[in-house]
Structures are given as C-alpha cells and as structure tokens.
Image (cartoon, rainbow, N blue to C red):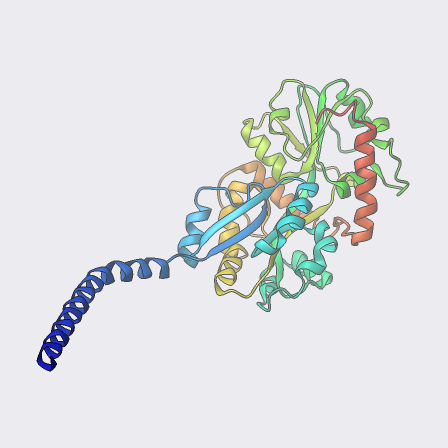
Length: 358
C-alpha cells in the first residue's frame, strides 16, 4: 500500500509539473501582446481643452502646430455671442484647461478663473505695445491671464446702398439705410454703448433707432453682407475686414470716433498641468499671434504690423495704433452691472421681435 501511494503521489506531482509548464508557456505567449498594449496606453497624448471665440483656432495650421509643439491632443469649443459663451461656461467650465473670452466677460467669470494657475502668463505683457501694455497693467489682472487679440469697433457699409460720413450720428446712419438690411453685434455691452448713452435702459430704444431698416442682431453676418440689400453692419473691425476681403474690397469700413472703442480678448490658464502651460505660452506668444493675424484680421497686443498681405488691414491696423493714446476702451462691468444690462438687452430684442429678423 505504501509503494502504491508513493507511485500515485509521483504521478500527481508529474501532472502538476506538466500543468505548470503549460501555463508558463501560455503566459509567455501572451506577455508580448500585453506589453504592447501597455506601451500603447503609455504614449496616449494628454488632451488640452479650450473654449474660444469662433474662428481663432480653426485655421488648418493651428491644431498641428499646437499638437506637435506641446505633444498634446488639442480640442476646442467655439462660441459667437455672449449668451452662448455664458451657457457653455456654466455647463462645462470644469472641463476646460484654457479659456479665450471677451474682456467684458471678465467681471462675470472672475471668481471662476482667478488663481486657477500659478503660472505667470501675464509676464508676456512686458513685451506688449506701450499703450496696450499700460492698459493691461491698469486692469490688475491675476497672473494666469494675458491678452489674446485686440479689436476696434467699426462700421462696414455697402456704397451701393448707403454713404456713411465721419460726422454721421447713429440715427442718421439708420435713416440713410432706408429699408435695406443692416446688422449689429449681439452683445449687451456693445448695445449699451450704442443705444443706452444716458443709462436710462429704454426697452424701446432699438425700435426707435432702427426706423425702416430690416435689422439683424447677430455677430456672424456673413450671409447678410452677401446680399444686394445689405447696407451696413456695426461690429469689431476684425470681422469687418474678413467680410471686406470676402467681397473683394467692394465694401467699405469707417471708424467713427463717437462710436468707436477699443476692446480685447483675454486668455486664462485654468490649471498647472505642464501641457496646459505649454499650450497657453504658445497661444500668447508673439510669433503665434503674428502668424494668426493673417487669418483672423485682428490686432496683436505686441503691435506687430504685417509685412505683407491685405493693404486695408495694414491701414486699419496703423489707424488703430495711432488712436490708442486717446481712444476709449470698452467698459468692463461688474457681474451685477452685466446682469442688469443683459436683461435690458434681452427685453429690448424681445420688444422688437416682430421687426428684428436676426
């Protein structure tokens, strides 16, 4: 019995040895595949998510440049109105690493962005054009904010349907437009600048001003400016220059001092990730903004004039720089001031809803 038990024991040991050998062989065959998958996962690029004004990051060269320079996957959401910006910000602000926004929104989202990064993005300001640098320092922005692009308000007009003179007031411009179409930017602070000079918040101001004009309230008036019925649009000069180039210089641009203000877009870094820092530094760099000028038609805070390209853009850029010492900057409201102005703007659009087509 003892010998029989020992023989059975040896058989069991041999079986376990064979089984263990098979398992080792099987595992060794699987290991390279597992290692390959681990290697693939380890080189997945981190994502940097940006909320931005429409058109800034859409030129085809921008995404490859950012991704190759910073070794990231760049994704971005765009907006074209203040309302759309606020909706996206409220819904997804925790998902963004960088935000590019109109300076009039600063008071509204200040609490969400201040101190989100310790990186000194504002150090770029020491290289800005002198008048722009002085204005930046006057605002006392936190260190994670810098300037993106500068703008100036303007009138784009169709000489076939209207003639705008430097001495014209807003009522005269609308009267000259007759029954033609026109467009104004959908922005409560811009609207207040135009229609609320006495801060009386008249909800009928738009109806009284527009007279017979078929008015669109929109920041993207590409299709409107393409019609034969188009008379004028009031917007930033960057958008106006894009429309002028699109229509082969058939449209004119005028800067009327009484309706002109300077404004800027801000860029804020929202965390201290090294990839976010790389992208933020690139987007605010002198070389990047200089290259992007040729696609956006906005003005660099560094004051660098283009060396070639659209002559109308160059002329307007030079005019902008010459006006900077005396031009007024758009007012940056507090959050409560913005809410009051925005309610008035929405009410005024609603009051004119039967007349406004946009």
